[in-house]
Length: 292
Ligand code: HEM
Ligand code: HEM
Image (cartoon, rainbow, N blue to C red; front, side, top):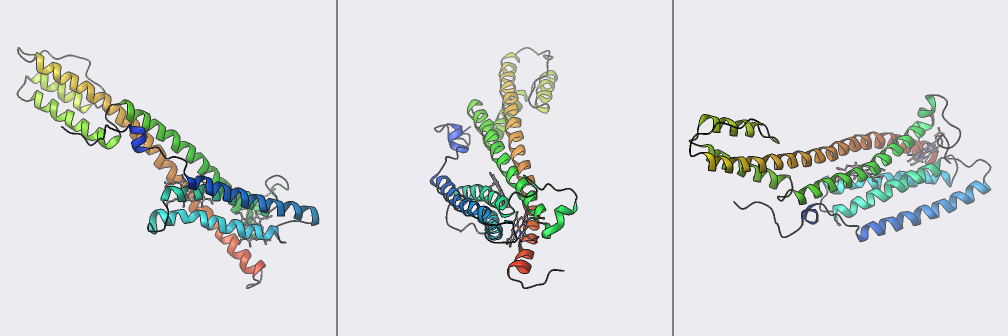
């Protein structure tokens, strides 16, 4: 039977190869330039100001900039899920997501002059809630960005696991494997039809235990040897493909689990950052509401 694979291309090129595109460079250069400029302004400020901190500009504006960068980073979700018509490939948006996310964190460090991170360490839990949860916002962003970096590494590692398995199993990725395994099972069923009870029991036992074959050989009746040999080879091939399928499924599950964790972290972090950013904007920047 024809399988749903395209043997003309190596599996890793067909499925997983995500090359570094121009977008990778563009967003890296934009981020480096932005951070370079902000850092230069920061150096001048800490040299000239007696108490450089998030209350005064320019460090306060760094908070606003970091806030905007966090929102831009989160816009990736918009492109991926809700507004797929937006220009550019999702992969290019992911590079924007990656570099702007890291830059947002680096600028947030400058916003509060590394307080609670490199000096002036938190002594009590109230430190997390003062300044409208400023420190919590920073820590949430830190964990989110670390989770993003970890996830990207995990993603490329697991993608490599799938690619190398797909190129070695002779069939390809999970869907093709499932179809091929089904085809092998039909073959075994055809071969065992009308055969002795032991022949059938052996095949059934092998089909019920994916990935392995029963160790005890059946007592065959006369004339069954050739078909049994064929069935045995088919079952062996199926067991090996089953192992390959399990390996690929495990790799996908690892990637999916990480995504779920990153998504939950992103929602929590965005809530805290939004709270801090909006409160500070309303109270200390626009003076629209008075502090309690
Ligand atoms: C609209 C954007 C933002 C504005 C206007 C802003 C403004 C401020 C101001 C005025 C303060 C000090 C005043 C106070 O004690 O209330 C502050 C503190 C702080 N902000 Fe922001 N900020 C913004 C975004 C951010 C972001 C995105 C982060 C990090 C994710 C952040 C992290 C912090 C931290 C860690 C502190 C110091 C908290 C402390 O020492 O207790 N800010 N911010
Ligand atoms: C401001 C910081 C960040 C925010 C707010 C954020 C938020 C998000 C959100 C909401 C998603 C889910 C997208 C969706 O499925 O709709 C996501 C996915 C993802 N993020 Fe982040 N993230 C941040 C930083 C990072 C960083 C620094 C990296 C990598 C170094 C990263 C890597 C990823 C990856 C690989 C995905 C999965 C992409 C996909 O499955 O299409 N994130 N992020």
